[in-house]
Length: 472
Ligand SMILES: *Cc1c(COP(=O)(O)O)cnc(C)c1O
Image (tube, rainbow, N blue to C red):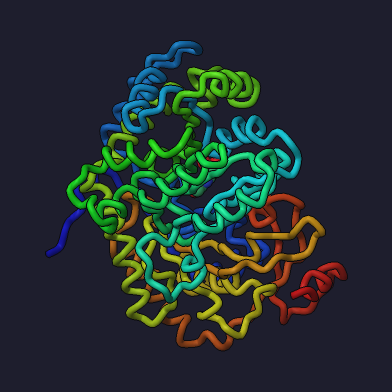
C-alpha cells in the first residue's frame, strides 16, 4: 500500500532546465567542479541535503516569534528546552552550523598533538577540524561498509573489536575521544545500531575515553533502529533518540540536516559542567554569546520547531521511503549502488559504474560531471577527490568511489527523482566512452569545494598536474 507524504504543498519555487549546449559550457567554465556551478544552472539539485530542505508552515510562523534579544533570548530558552527533552543533556549551546560546534569543542578535547580521534567514518569538515586542532582522525567502521554489494542492517557500526584492540595497544593520553557519526554519512548514510553504541560505550568506559555523537542525522538513525533492530519495533522515535544519546557524553550537530532548517548547529553536553564552561568561553569569540551562538533568534525558533518535526514517525517514513524508492529505481536500471539504501542519499558505486577509470582519475567526479551534462542534475563526489592528500602531499586512494545523490527533505517529488534515475540509466548504456579527470588547481585544505579539473584526455598544460597522477 502506498504511504503518502504527511503534508501538502503550499508554496512552489520554479526550476528550469537549460539546454545541453549551455550545460556543456557551464560545467567547463566551472572547471568541472559542480560546486562552482551557479545554482540556477542546475535543474535538480542533489548536491546535498544540508540546509536545502523545505520548512513547514509552523517553522515559518516560528520565524515571526523569534526573540532577537542579544542575551537571554526567549527563543534560546525554547531551543534549549527542546534539545534537553530530546537528548536528556543538560548543557546546550547554539552554533552557526555543525562545523562551528566542532571548532568550539575539538581543541578542548585534543590536548596534545597527534592524539587520535576514533570514529566510524569521519565526515570531511569533521576530519578537517580534528586535524586543525592537531588531532589524527582514525576510521574504524565495520568492514562490511566498504563492500557496496553486501547487505547489512547497520553498515555505519563502529568495529568494536578493532576499537578495543587499538585502545589496548595505545597509551590513554594518545587518544582524545571517540566520535560516532549517526547516520554514517561517509559510508552511505548508513545507520548505527543501539547495540553498537552500547558496546562502544562499554569499551570506552573500560579505557576512560569520552564518547561523542556527530548527530546531524540522529532522527533518521533512530528510524532505522526502529525498523531494523530486534526489540525496537514498538518503541517511539523520541525514546530511541534518547537512548542513542544516553550512550554519549555530548554531541555536535549540524542542524541543517535533521534539524530541518537552512542554517544552524548545536553543541550539547550531558553533565560535564567544567567542559561546558570551557566551551562557552570559546563560543563567545568564535560563534557568539552563549544564548545565540551565531544564530538569529528566529533561526533558533525555527530549529526548535524543526527538531520536533524531525522525530515525527510519519515524516521519517515519507523521507526515508522516498530515498529508498529512488535507490530501487536505480537498481532496477542496473546502476550499482551502496546496499542497503541509506537515509539521506543514494550512493552510486562509481568503481563498478566506470571500472575503466582509475581512482586517481576520480571516477565518481567523472560520473557527476556526466550526470550534469546529461540532465542538469547535480550530485557530488565522495571518493578520492574529496579525501585529498596525506601528510606528505600524496594523493590518497579512497576505499570507495561514490557519486552521492542526496535528497533534500520535503523538497522534490518522486517524479524529479525518477527523472534523475532515468538519466543515469541512459549514461549506463554509454559508460565505456566516459573518461576521467585530473586536478589543475587545488587549495591545501578541503580542496574539493574550489579545485579546478580537466578531462585527462585533453592534454596537460600545468606541469605539476602530471605528478598528481603518477602515484597509485
Ligand atoms: C554536515 C555535517 C557536518 C558539518 O556540519 P555543517 O553544518 O555543514 O557545518 C558534520 N558531520 C556530519 C556527519 C555532517 O553531515
